[in-house]
Image 1 (cartoon, rainbow, N blue to C red):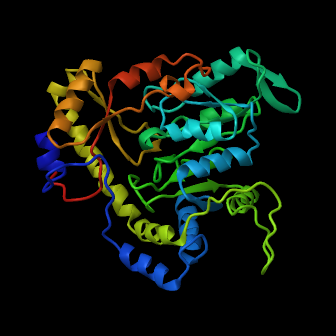
Image 2: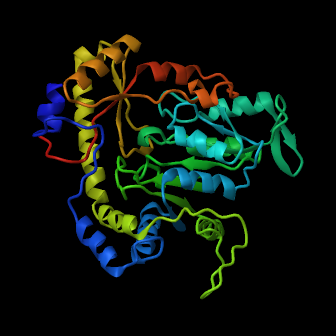
Image 3: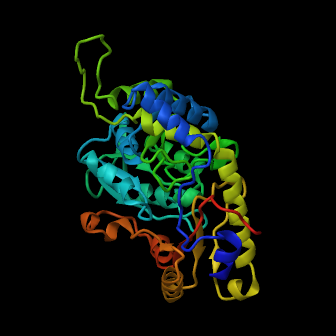
Length: 385
């Protein structure tokens, strides 16, 4: 408690988990957007925001949406996920991942995660497909136990830690299953020189108020495929055919485009991205040094760190406690004393709307869910370390 208050986040009565910081040109750009009268889904800031994100990540194109959930829904729709299909995903994730699958009328299938990434395990997926997959000539495989088509795989880079995405994409490619990366939390996270979200056919980012870069509410589809990006932009703009005055819509579309006002905020935030990421790494290094002390390591506390060959953005610093009792005691003490900490999300198949969903057995996720605590990680204030 003293370490967090006196070393990491000084001068605050309460310490939030991840609060936004506005120390650049946010006010100037938002006022400029208002003065331009382009405050909805058309404007120079939307275009600039998309181009800057594409440039930073290395994507061929980026398509801005109203939020990350809308981006996930759009990505699944683009890759042909249909009612009655199945989508392989992980149980340890924010509910939006599973909800987007359900928006398509499809069924999420929950497969286990890896201890050192907290993301969907390529080995567990390969084992699941070996046990349940039934190849179809010229089509995506079917689940032999349900008869449903396995239409896609939707992993998540949890808390900004890159999962074994190259191996997962390879395992899915053996079965003809496309991969959509939920990279909502991993802006600034890389595997080698490749940004998360660019291994599968499509990737999704989030710019919610608690993310490293915020637009208030917002999301983004990133891809190496310009044709897919064109389709994404079309269907997120109500599938409206360009015309000076006629209203013609040539397919089912969604009103999912990001407003120019939000993009203006995002443009100012992106100008500070390198500094934000650098500061988050300093916070992570300070936590790492603190929890390496003998009294913590001997007691069984383990801080998550990036794997070799990856670069995590450390969106939320993540601590694994020795057991559920230690986790609950830490959560109780910190929150009682004005320092916000949080446990892992409830595993998806324990939520009322997903009880009874098929899962391949998830012992790692079950264990992690009992022991995980997220620590304050806001890139704001001054560090004394």
